[in-house]
Length: 443
Image: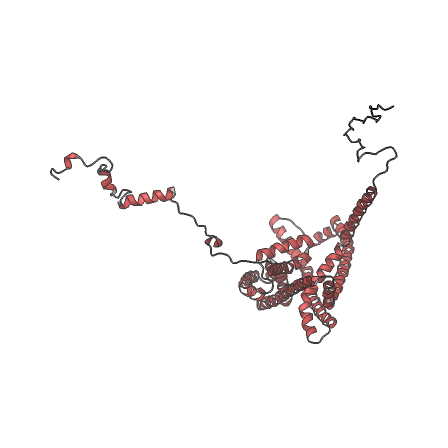
């Protein structure tokens, strides 16, 4: 029984409760053998596996579609290049599809004519080399017999060549190489057809494409996209047309020279020089001039020298007179930037990257120039590369000034001539005066 006091009431419990809370099991450990895993863990594992699978599939698809993406990029720049001509025809009542077809037809005729003329040049040179091979072989044999006291004959050399093993191996490798070249030619034709179709659709349906892109953007972004598109069209089209005009001028100038010298295939060589010199920047002129020099050398070695001199002089005229006037408002970029962009484009996309590098860089430069704020530069000599330094007399300068004073008898630092300073002693300011015998009494 509980203890009671005198009044018969139960005594209260004076014991204090334990303030320490009961110990619970850690959250990261299982509460017991039958505990279940968290619900979020299976979802996280499935999501991680799905992301890895999507990344692997995207990487595989990108590598498989790299060729198609490059073709689409080429077609897009080609469509931008012909956009001004197509818009000009469409503004005068022609349908965009017909205008695009007309431009493409003209480009195809020009390319086919150039390939035909270049092929005729190469075929003519090959035929001439084959026909003149016996005479060249006779001259080589005569030179060997004269200088080395041998008795070689052309018949023996020809039979030895025909019976040699390396000729048989060369013929077999050439037969295999013909199949490889045929495969590459068919692949190139298919790629050309793909680029042409995409470029035609981009140019013919340009307004519809821009409308489809702008329909998924807010109005503020639509103006920026249209402005960037317009800049790209201006720069790419301006680059193509300015280069085409300079190629025409260059071709005419070189045709006049080659025709005056009597070099064969003058029209084909002029077209070659015009196209290669303009669409391969910086070194294109010298690469293009190598072929006319080689053909002119076969006529007369002095003609090759005249062609070289003309190529160098025309390059300077083009760089300092013609190009600034034609490209000032289209692709006015620094030559070093142009050369670097061509190298970068070649490293990324090969020959195609070299062709589209300059208009791409010009478009980017114009786009940044439209959105990047510029400030006036202070009139400071350091902007021109002049450094404001306090002139300090070096050892050479001090020695030269001392020698000049010594030779001319100029006064030294205290103002006395050097001859007199050597004879007189220090004056009263320095503690010493003139000798006492030299003083006049009463002075």
